[in-house]
Image 1 (cartoon, rainbow, N blue to C red):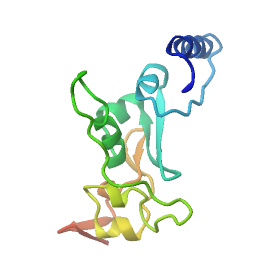
Image 2 (cartoon, rainbow, N blue to C red):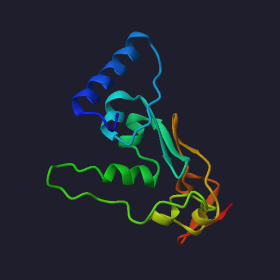
Image 3 (tube, rainbow, N blue to C red):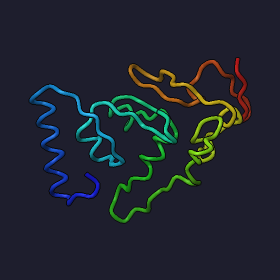
Length: 150
């Protein structure tokens, strides 16, 4: 719906929502529009660099964020009309030569040595809520910005 007029986009999204309810069906929606996600979706998968960074309910993602990338996305939404945008610093990874570790590590303010060397698996951070971040993995010991597997 990105290239559509705002009115047409709203009509299509409303129709999708009506069909979802009427036919008790699922809808897979791929979008960068967090407003659309909050109004139409029940579960969310946040991807970065072609990998799942976090998955959970809309409330999990918007109010109990588990991954620094998700937090960065939410922080980049202006809260008031004259508020400055908070960008995610750095550049996206080269997907032709992807990083060995977490694809978000180079842009993450929480990144540790382990993040750059090993890709984290999705870890349960709450009921039905998972995050692919070493900060949530209980099998590692964190000490002075360096992390070592236990």
